[in-house]
Image (cartoon, rainbow, N blue to C red):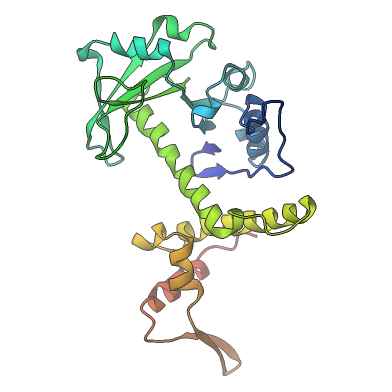
Length: 285
C-alpha cells in the first residue's frame, strides 16, 4: 500500500499462482515491487515520487532488493518496512543500553504500557541503502502469547526499517504499527468474497476479483464519507446485518420518491443519517 496525506492506494494482485522448484508461495522482492508499482500508478503523477508518499509493508518487504528499489535515486519514496529479527539484529538489541530505550506511544499520545523502542546502528546496517534507519520495539506479550527464539528477556521483539528523518522514533514506530489496518482490509476482503474463488477458470476468477475489489472500495469509502462514531468500525458481516439487509419501501408521493425504513429497525437512524451525509457532499464532477 502506498499512502500520502489523505490518500491511499490499494492493489490486489490477481492471476494464476506461480510456483518455484521448492513449491514455496510467492512473496518475493519482485512481487513487492510489482505491487508497489501498481499502487503508485493509482496516484496522481505528483505523488508517484517524493518523500510525501509512504510505502509500508510487513517483514515480507524487508529485503535488500525491495528496499533498494524504494530508495533508488530519482524515486525518493519514503518507506517503512518490517524486518525479520535475524541473529545480528537480536545480538544488537541485547547490546542496547537501558537509557537508549524510549517509551512507545498510542495514537492519542499516551504512553503504550509495557512497550519501548530504540534505534539500532553499526554493523546491522551494512549492505543496506544509505540513510536507512533500523528501529526495534520490545513489548510485554499479551497473556497466552508464545515467545519466539528471537525474542529477548521475556519481551516480544519487532523491527522495521525507514528512511524518515527528523521524527521521534516513538512516532515512527506508531506510524509503522498502524500499518496493521491492512490486516483489517484483508479480513474484510475475505469476508467479501476473497476467501474462496468460486469459479473454475482463471479468467472467470479474475472477473470475480474485480467485483471483490469494487466492493472493497465501497467498504473503504462508505464509512469515511457516510458513517460516524462506532459505526465506522463495523466490518462486512455487521454491515450486512445492520445496514445492507434493512427492509425498506420505496414510496412515490407528489412526484417524489421516498425511501422509508421500518421504524422498529434499531439502525434505521444510522442509515438515514448516512444518506443525508452523502447527499450533502459536493458534486465531484
